[in-house]
Length: 107
Image 1 (cartoon, rainbow, N blue to C red):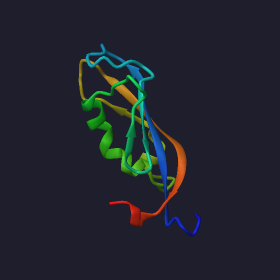
Image 2: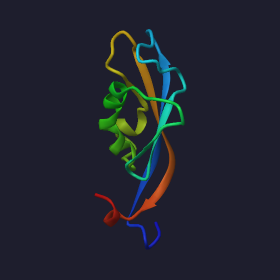
Image 3: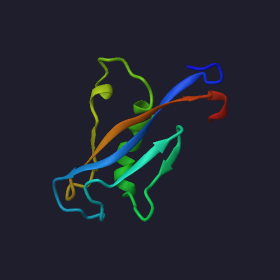
Image 4: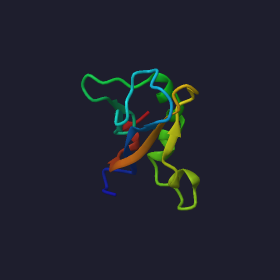
């Protein structure tokens, strides 16, 4: 970590890994969004991401942005499910980049 950065966080990509039911929300395998610089949500141009799928994975993203102990279940697990029983949409959360940040610049 450099002197101007007092913490490090991972950027994340959340991707639709598979859909076991029928896609009610119009998403398809491979649809994704990126979470960068702690709180910047980026969608590919012209794409959408279901707000209910987002709500299901959102509580885990802050933890996935941080380095966790090797034995922590969240360090190992990468798959998260949308709550819609008709869809059974499964998302994969991947770390894409480790970024130095200054905590004084964040809320």
